[in-house]
Length: 116
Picture 1: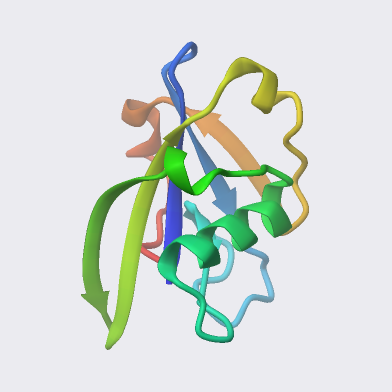
Picture 2 (picture 1 turned 90 degrees about the vertical axis):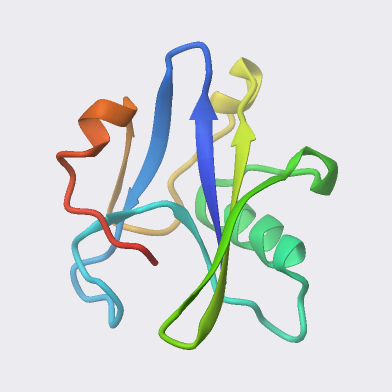
């Protein structure tokens, strides 16, 4: 599983996805965008595919920075961060999930957050 901490440095904000109400895993809570590996993908390939599917953002493997790796419920989890460019923000479209929000780190502490 790979997740992305997307940072808007200009506005000092992070992007979160609200899970669908009918989701099998952690419904109706906020989380970072990302998902599970498919067909022997590397963690980076997984993240690049998931981010394209979820918010229409094309990522380059050379611009991904590993933030943390951990084991959660017997699943390897990798969290990367990417600092988004202003022109990339305009390309974003919510394609999966019920909502999204740009919020400061401090404000994000008040969200109902999920690890994965």
